Length: 258
Image (tube, rainbow, N blue to C red; front, side, top):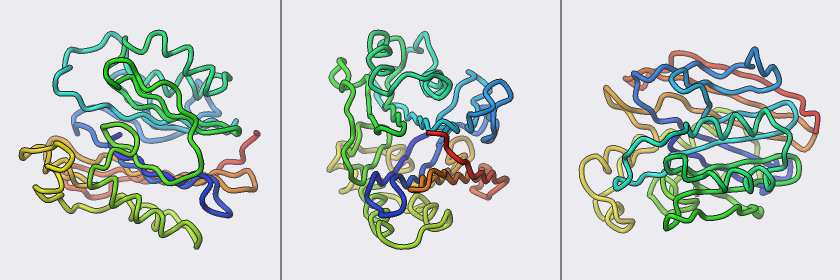
């Protein structure tokens, strides 16, 4: 997943509002979100190549999402799959802080990643790609955040524009269509916008859109999610083909036990 925009404790009714795009090679086998037969309380998509997930939620109120950290200087395959980090948290019972402390000891076994973890008590961020040492576990304060393939709130154009759009929903009505629009723009950043954050070249420009369409790589799914103050979660995942056309949709409403 390459873009996650989320509003945390900014709306009077929804402690969490989230819109996200998963960008991936179209050839990589994927299973749309569902409750996993071997983990029936976990709702998540599945990467059929490595077995993990990029984002999910559980009936226990546990949430996890991950993005790759873009580092052209480190392209050697890592010994472990990043998708196991999200799945292990979703199926476990450790607090985010305890879990992040444990995985910090082996964070170098994974390629660069950004990890979001949450439960009823808080929302946390961790990266293993800050000057080679990792950001450490950071408990997030109320606010509106954006995460792509750099660190949290790195001002890439699609992150900046998306945060602005999400803030416009902070006090009004919310539905999945409105949230999906937050990450739906196919507009490309200008050369000056990219240069301001150290990006350049045709590939950077193609990837600067929120919603990416190309024959081999692009936005495979858009997920929108909210948690309400009454203990419910509402989830929608829309899948897309290589032309950007929708090919499937999963909608679920969960009653959370925590």
